[in-house]
Amino acid sequence: MPNENENIGFGGTVHVNDGASSAYVIVPNIVDFMPPAYKLGTVESKRLDLPGGVIVKIPTLTNGQSFTIKHNFTKAAFARFEALRTAKAAKNFRITLPDGSPYFTETVPGIVVENKKGSIESETIMTIETTVEVSGDLVTSGA
Image (cartoon, rainbow, N blue to C red; front, side):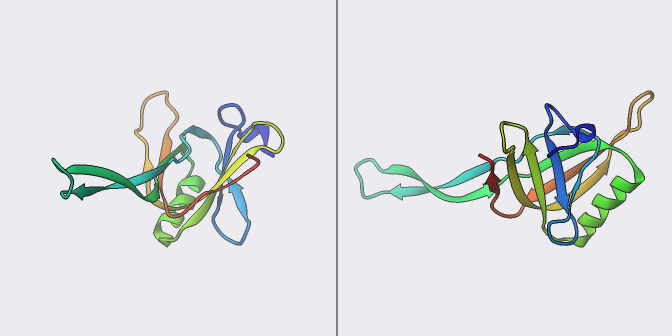
């Protein structure tokens, strides 16, 4: 269950398993996050044997789209996600959205591909934008 001090939106949280099995740790101080979407790919099937020729779209593989976690800058948070990026390995991200009991949860495997410090502006909290490339199928529970 989300810790109310770490909630985003209406109580949604993001955890990352960056080590031992099932060792999920919350991503604190999230400013903005859009859960990843999965897109069904298509290819063209050209039917030149039909009168006038017909191009038909047929479904192919599903591809997970990348997602970005924007969170407040701390040296610890930056170092943590920088270590995930340099490890070049897929880690599981658990997204929890409060909707009934049990909460709606998706677990998404992903690779941290970018960990960028935000701009430095007067009277503004500095942020980090961590981009994760989805590397497999999601697992949904509590749906």
